[in-house]
Amino acid sequence: MEEDVSGDIGLSTPIRQPRLLNDSGSTTRRAPPPAIDLPPPSAAMWKAPSPGSPTVMSPTSATPPLSVGSPPLSARLTRSRTMPRLSSRLEPQLYDFTREEAENLEPEKVEALQRWVVSVAVVDFDLDIGPVVAKLYPSIKLSAPDRENIAFSSFPDTTLFDTGTQTHSFKIRLSQTLSIVSKDSVRDIGVIYGYACFMQRKDPTSKRGYLQRSIVFLTHLPYIGIFDRAINLFGPMFFTHGNAMLQSGCLNVCSWPDPTPGCTLELGLLGSVITAELPRSDEEQQHLYKLLSEDSVVIASLPMQSIIQLLADILPKLWECLVLCDPILVFAPSPAISSAVVWWLRDLIRPLPFAGDIRPYFHIHDRDFNLLVSKNAPRPGLILGVTNPYFENVCKHWPHTLSIGSSGTPVNGAGKGKSATALASQSFGPSIGYHTKHNRYIGKDSALLKKLEAAVKAGPKEQFQVTELARQHFAQRSQQILAPLNRYFSSLLPKPPDSSSPALSAYNPSPSPSLNVPSPSSSRTPSPALRSKPISPATSSIGTSVPDYRVKPFNTKDFFASLKKHGAQLPFRSPGKQKEFYERWLKSPAFGAWISGRVDAAQNVLV
Figure (cartoon, rainbow, N blue to C red):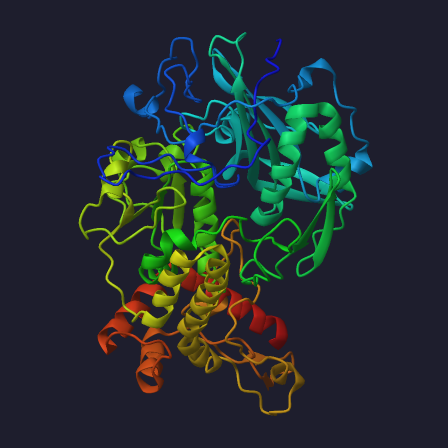
């Protein structure tokens, strides 16, 4: 297919900040947000949605019959019209990657690549069936449902800009386990992350008038910071130069050092170097160093975009809901914003163990749609990022909905009156705000909130500094939640006859919860401390009793007696609120993950 040489992928000139609403507040729909992975666009460069601009998920041919359990036709075709439209500027011709094949990687190169990236997917739009995976490099065995899920997840579920690029991330559950060989061992992957760069440009030879394509890193690693930066480098180069960049980029990744937890690595990619710091564990909160820029250290567990200006007013209430494993629906105007917000929410509860599931960008075609979105109560700990207005109807029974506007629109608590900004969002989804009936158990830090509000008004540098302050504040509060639990847990440890016993003196209960906490995707049998069976001393072969070094079971009644006696470090609003909070937390999946990690760490030392 001959391609238009005048297309633009939105990278040739700087872009300035958009105009959100007019002074009169008469706008009837939400202002178009910028693609948050690009520089802020200019209001003069925005265009109204053109009638011919395609909806990404909708083929031009007749819509196929709906499957059982699928949303109604009107819901499937409803799309938000909020993506940025960039003015046309000359850009080098996009390369047709089908003209020639990239050379196959040697087996040892494939093994080296798959330490970081399982495969790189190229996704195109088929006029008859919609998005399809056109290429996997290197080739991996994926079932047809998984290929379809990756294809739809790689394309934004929204009306797009006329020409440009945008990046986002997603997470899907595979229908069949994928086996990856690494250093004489086999690793089974049941969940895969995708980091996508989507491109749309005008194409007069297409019936739709546009060429749409995505390039996607498929990986088992939840390192949003690294792959967000990498796909921003890799995507535009591939769209311009095709398979030459595909092969070169993969060979660059082959030369990367092993993804060793806790290390700071230099990762070369297509002439650039990404300096990245990996977390020591999934529950460690990494610290920001300085204002994020091209030469700064990339924090692997955080996206490049900051969202503090969007959530400053609601952070205390939002944090409590996350800690209690309440499900949260994140409604955003684009996959780029929804995925960034979901990753930040995941980071907000560190170092508490995470016992839920995140879906940075979720759509109606996902194979887990009927599993995660139904009339039943949503799963505990589920954080779902969506853009399709259909979710507003099917998720009305969810306890919490966070509706995000553009990067310049802060989120306030719901029920404070309808502003012009909130009214602007109602044409395609819930009004901007945090819609919840949750009442806080813990008093908020007024001084911190004032700093956050001041930073939002001040500028990016101040926002960065206060973002790190807010993260440290909630990390400290997360540790304070565990203080009474750690105190009681220490009483469950066996007391040796000799206090100088090396087995027990080596184990010192720490307030840190990062003790081999299992990942949410892994399965684990109940720990011994959770089984309410009596503990009896072990008996040797000659009939003599030997000390039993097993951890005693956790007793809820005894814990609350300890809590009443010693109190908590957190500023609860009342003693009743304190008890109610811990009653809820002990029933949440987070408690199961925490106690399992503590028991396993103790038993490894005691046995």
